[in-house]
Length: 333
Image 1 (cartoon, rainbow, N blue to C red):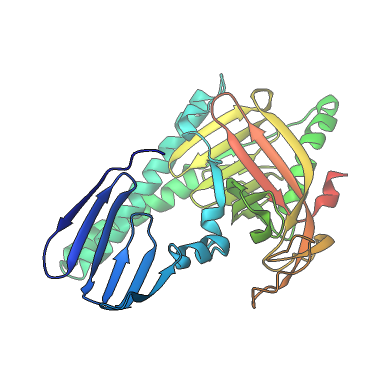
Image 2: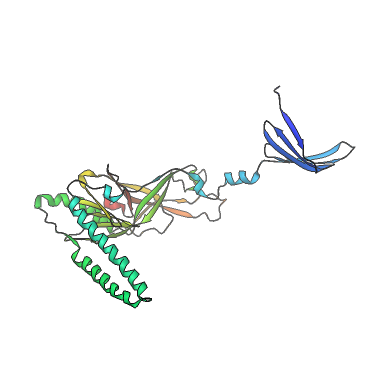
């Protein structure tokens, strides 16, 4: 039998503190009735008739509410681990050799355009208080018009016949992606502890919508179709010979020889609207039981489609780290 150390402190008023190896316990009450909170976290109620030896003891289990919440979590946020953010390095740190001069000119144009925009807004606001400020409004407006017209960088491509097939192989798939009903950038991915709360998905994905275009955004202008993907403050611009990374007034550019890419299809549990060009390959439930059927404990448990989407992963040693998802997986064929 092991030794047990126990010390009791009587603080008066029917309140007692018990210090032991297992922790601190509290009890309070009067003669014939006492409530005890044990060091293990249980609650014990004792009622007795003094002098008779007759008593009744009831002990509740430890933190029933916590056990229930752990068994049936209300939020799947606690069901994620090993979260990884999929973001690019600073654009100016991603520059292939030989592209520095062109980027310097583009960055200068963007900075002047930013200054003219800020000056235009401030002068308009201040002009209602000091009318003389409207003179600066005209100056900044003229500067903005000049930058938009004269500051554009024209990229005039002349593609030789022996290079046309190479360029087509590179650009046509990207242009097809811009034409998909939905395109997303995957910004974060997490592993899942209990898949029954994530429709049996092993990973949870955080994605954001992409605005796509086949025209080059300012400050560039091209004489051919390109592929532009804008998500938040970042734009990826795929040109025949290089990839531009635009982050506000910062621009980077990489030759395709400095980029590794991987394109494939993936099954995705779609909780939003299904794009019209997507292929539904299966169905599941928002919450699933062990047999794969719907978990009846959840009233809002709805059936969800599993779609086949396309994915494009892009990486470089300089810090390019991008995953694009698109609704029409058939373009991978």
